[in-house]
Image (cartoon, rainbow, N blue to C red; front, side):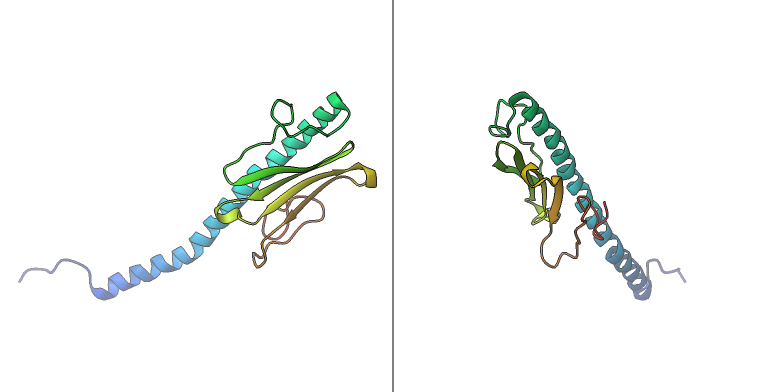
Length: 148
Protein backbone atom coordinates (compact mmCIF):
# COMPACT_ATOMS: atom_id res chain seq x y z
CA UNK A 1 0.00 0.00 0.00
CA UNK A 2 1.18 3.47 -0.86
CA UNK A 3 1.75 6.13 1.80
CA UNK A 4 -0.68 9.02 1.69
CA UNK A 5 0.61 12.50 1.00
CA UNK A 6 -0.70 15.83 2.27
CA UNK A 7 -1.93 17.36 5.50
CA UNK A 8 -4.81 16.42 7.69
CA UNK A 9 -7.56 18.88 8.45
CA UNK A 10 -6.43 19.15 12.06
CA UNK A 11 -2.88 20.07 11.04
CA UNK A 12 -4.17 22.80 8.74
CA UNK A 13 -6.48 24.17 11.48
CA UNK A 14 -3.56 24.31 13.93
CA UNK A 15 -1.46 26.29 11.43
CA UNK A 16 -4.36 28.67 10.73
CA UNK A 17 -4.84 29.20 14.48
CA UNK A 18 -1.15 29.97 15.00
CA UNK A 19 -1.14 32.44 12.09
CA UNK A 20 -4.28 34.13 13.48
CA UNK A 21 -2.73 34.54 16.92
CA UNK A 22 0.50 35.96 15.49
CA UNK A 23 -1.46 38.36 13.26
CA UNK A 24 -3.55 39.56 16.18
CA UNK A 25 -0.35 40.57 17.96
CA UNK A 26 1.75 41.77 15.02
CA UNK A 27 -0.69 43.94 13.06
CA UNK A 28 -1.58 46.37 15.91
CA UNK A 29 2.08 46.63 16.89
CA UNK A 30 3.07 47.38 13.32
CA UNK A 31 0.30 49.97 12.95
CA UNK A 32 1.50 51.72 16.10
CA UNK A 33 5.07 51.64 14.83
CA UNK A 34 4.00 53.23 11.53
CA UNK A 35 2.01 55.91 13.38
CA UNK A 36 5.00 56.82 15.57
CA UNK A 37 7.25 57.06 12.50
CA UNK A 38 4.78 59.38 10.77
CA UNK A 39 4.47 61.56 13.88
CA UNK A 40 8.23 62.00 13.88
CA UNK A 41 8.08 63.54 10.40
CA UNK A 42 5.67 66.20 11.76
CA UNK A 43 7.57 66.99 14.95
CA UNK A 44 10.93 67.24 13.20
CA UNK A 45 9.45 69.52 10.53
CA UNK A 46 7.89 71.73 13.23
CA UNK A 47 11.21 71.94 15.07
CA UNK A 48 13.00 72.96 11.89
CA UNK A 49 10.26 75.45 11.11
CA UNK A 50 10.68 77.01 14.56
CA UNK A 51 14.34 77.64 13.80
CA UNK A 52 13.43 79.14 10.42
CA UNK A 53 10.87 81.42 12.07
CA UNK A 54 13.52 82.71 14.47
CA UNK A 55 15.87 83.30 11.56
CA UNK A 56 13.08 85.21 9.78
CA UNK A 57 12.52 87.28 12.93
CA UNK A 58 16.23 88.11 13.18
CA UNK A 59 16.20 89.37 9.59
CA UNK A 60 12.87 91.27 9.75
CA UNK A 61 12.14 91.99 13.44
CA UNK A 62 8.63 90.61 12.96
CA UNK A 63 6.93 87.30 12.21
CA UNK A 64 4.47 88.96 9.83
CA UNK A 65 5.19 87.77 6.30
CA UNK A 66 6.77 84.48 7.35
CA UNK A 67 5.46 81.12 6.09
CA UNK A 68 5.29 82.40 2.52
CA UNK A 69 7.17 81.50 -0.62
CA UNK A 70 10.37 83.43 -1.13
CA UNK A 71 11.19 83.67 2.56
CA UNK A 72 13.53 81.61 4.68
CA UNK A 73 10.51 80.35 6.64
CA UNK A 74 8.54 78.45 4.00
CA UNK A 75 6.01 75.94 5.33
CA UNK A 76 7.30 72.36 5.11
CA UNK A 77 5.58 69.57 3.24
CA UNK A 78 5.11 66.01 4.39
CA UNK A 79 3.09 63.15 2.89
CA UNK A 80 0.96 62.55 6.00
CA UNK A 81 0.60 66.03 7.51
CA UNK A 82 -0.55 69.43 6.32
CA UNK A 83 1.14 72.48 7.79
CA UNK A 84 -0.41 75.87 8.46
CA UNK A 85 0.74 79.13 9.95
CA UNK A 86 -2.54 80.65 11.25
CA UNK A 87 -0.99 83.25 13.58
CA UNK A 88 1.81 85.65 12.63
CA UNK A 89 2.09 88.90 14.53
CA UNK A 90 4.87 91.29 15.37
CA UNK A 91 6.04 89.17 18.32
CA UNK A 92 4.41 85.75 18.05
CA UNK A 93 3.59 82.93 15.69
CA UNK A 94 1.81 79.60 15.64
CA UNK A 95 2.48 76.66 13.34
CA UNK A 96 0.30 73.56 13.20
CA UNK A 97 0.78 70.14 11.66
CA UNK A 98 -2.48 68.27 11.15
CA UNK A 99 -2.54 64.59 10.26
CA UNK A 100 -4.24 64.12 6.93
CA UNK A 101 -4.03 60.43 6.09
CA UNK A 102 -4.18 56.94 7.52
CA UNK A 103 -3.04 56.28 11.06
CA UNK A 104 -2.34 59.95 11.87
CA UNK A 105 -5.63 61.43 10.65
CA UNK A 106 -6.92 63.77 13.34
CA UNK A 107 -3.57 64.11 15.13
CA UNK A 108 -2.54 67.77 15.51
CA UNK A 109 0.83 69.07 16.67
CA UNK A 110 1.41 72.74 17.34
CA UNK A 111 4.36 75.06 17.89
CA UNK A 112 3.34 78.34 19.51
CA UNK A 113 5.59 81.31 20.24
CA UNK A 114 3.59 83.49 22.57
CA UNK A 115 5.98 86.18 23.79
CA UNK A 116 3.43 88.78 24.95
CA UNK A 117 2.22 86.42 27.67
CA UNK A 118 5.79 85.54 28.58
CA UNK A 119 5.38 81.81 28.26
CA UNK A 120 7.94 81.43 25.49
CA UNK A 121 7.83 78.48 23.13
CA UNK A 122 4.97 76.04 23.72
CA UNK A 123 4.67 72.61 22.13
CA UNK A 124 1.25 71.02 22.27
CA UNK A 125 -0.67 68.20 20.66
CA UNK A 126 -4.24 66.99 20.37
CA UNK A 127 -5.46 63.56 19.42
CA UNK A 128 -8.73 62.13 18.08
CA UNK A 129 -11.30 61.12 20.67
CA UNK A 130 -11.08 57.45 21.48
CA UNK A 131 -7.53 57.04 20.18
CA UNK A 132 -6.18 56.28 23.65
CA UNK A 133 -3.33 58.77 23.23
CA UNK A 134 -2.50 61.10 26.11
CA UNK A 135 -0.80 64.46 25.93
CA UNK A 136 2.44 65.43 27.61
CA UNK A 137 2.77 68.81 29.35
CA UNK A 138 6.47 69.06 28.50
CA UNK A 139 6.87 67.88 24.90
CA UNK A 140 5.17 66.54 21.80
CA UNK A 141 3.85 63.09 22.65
CA UNK A 142 5.21 60.56 20.19
CA UNK A 143 3.99 57.44 21.98
CA UNK A 144 0.54 56.37 23.10
CA UNK A 145 1.35 56.77 26.80
CA UNK A 146 2.24 60.46 26.32
CA UNK A 147 6.01 60.01 26.48
CA UNK A 148 8.36 61.77 24.11
